[in-house]
Image 1: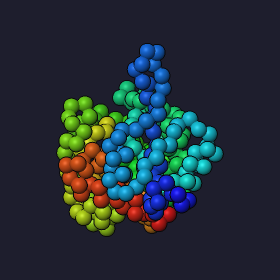
Image 2: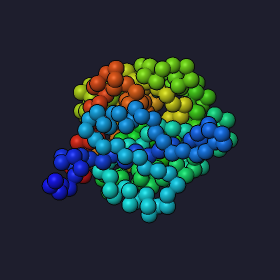
Image 3: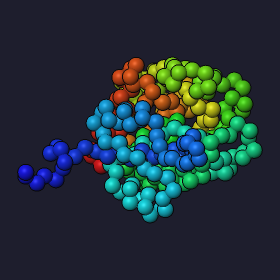
Image 4: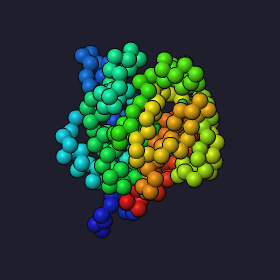
Length: 254
Ligand code: MN
C-alpha cells in the first residue's frame, strides 16, 4: 500500500475548533462532561469544515497550542458570563449557568483570534463573549431591565428553530454578503444582550426593539457574532449555511 500523508487520500480541509460546555451527566454518581450540541457540528460539516472540540480546564499555554493548530473557531451558545467580567450586577437574580473556567478559555481564544486575525464565528453566548472579551458589557437580563424590549427568551416555551423576530442587517456587512439579504427572521434563545459595544466591534444587525443582534470586527478576515442560532435554522432554510460557509472559506485561507 502506498504511503500517503492523509488517511483518506484527500486534500486537508479546514479544522474548526469549537469550544465546549461543562455539564453534569445524570449518572449515579453524576460526573462532569465537556460537550457541545450536535447542531453546530452538523452545520460545520455540511459546508466542508472539520469540527473539532476544544476541552475546558486546560492551562493557557495548552489552549494556545490548540489555537495554533485550528484554522478557525466557533464559539457556541451556553450559560451566562460572570458579570464581574464587565463590571455588571452580580446580584441580578436572573443570572444562570456561570462557569468561570469556560469564560477564561473562551476569552483567551476570542482575544487571540481577533488579535491574530484567525476566522471566528460566535453564536449567542459566543456573541456576548465576543463583546465582553473585547471590553464591552451586557444587559444582565433584557426582560427585567428593558421593559419595552421584545420577547427574546423563547427557549423556555418554543422549538429551537422558532422564528421569533426579524433583524435588520447593514447592507455593507459581511453578514449581509453571506446571507444575500438585509432582512431575516431569526430564532431568539437568549435573556441577555449587548449593552455597551466593545470599541473594536461594529454592530451590523438589530432587532426591531433596537437590541444589537450581530457584530463584526471591520477589516478582520472573518470575526462575526450573531445573537441568534443559525445552527438550529439551516435545516428549514439552507441559506443559513452561508454564514458557516463563510467561516470555512476564510479558514481555508488562514
Ligand atoms: Mn433576539
